[in-house]
Length: 105
Image (cartoon, rainbow, N blue to C red; front, side, top):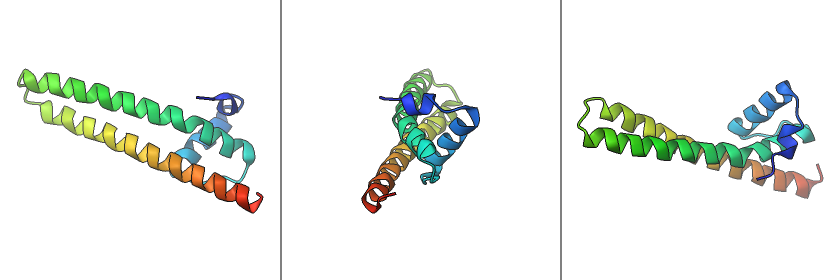
């Protein structure tokens, strides 16, 4: 996982790159687009880790019969959805990058 393009950005550029990733579109500035593609795999990995942790916690809470177990399962579902959505956005950005490269810009 190469985060060099993301790390080279200043604070506002990083926010713009993160926003571009989660919106799934290209900004048009090469450094932001490259930083968004650089940030994507890390974002997906972190979403997957959080989702797995929530599933484990939800299973343990349910085993002990806590009345708030459905809340944890709902949060785990949100983590799974965020993982799926991040993967979808990463694929979309990569496809846009391939199209932009083919078009020459």
